[in-house]
Length: 153
Image (tube, rainbow, N blue to C red; front, side, top):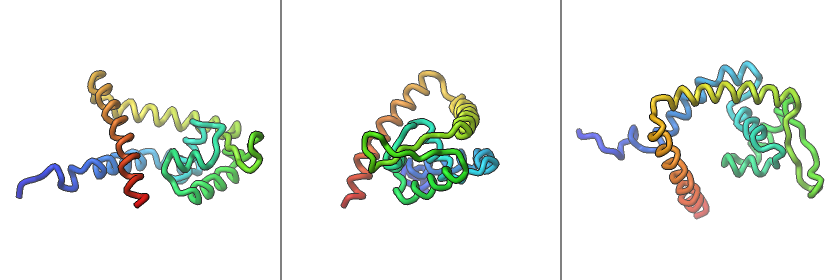
């Protein structure tokens, strides 16, 4: 039987999922040694990158369910990595920031992630990398339009 670009192994979403899973597994021991779950480190990383940030922004940015973000934030607060504070501009909202310990851990994890990313992308020439990122930007924008529309049906 002839292989098609539409076979599961060639589907874009499948290939992205496989690369993401391999990347996550390769970093899992780094996160676990520091007491973070898979969801926990993703939420933690987004807080670190966007702080100060509202939990709803984290959920929207990462397309996580708000209740999962809340549970992950609860664990991060209990572990002393994240602080919740009332938003001074809207007292009904919460703002998340990293604690000093959280900032130190974030820097360590980001350094490990950067090194892995650099090695992963090292097989591409500078021109291939530019084209790759431009294509990913287009695909991400299209997926937000297409898959959000399908979810709202």
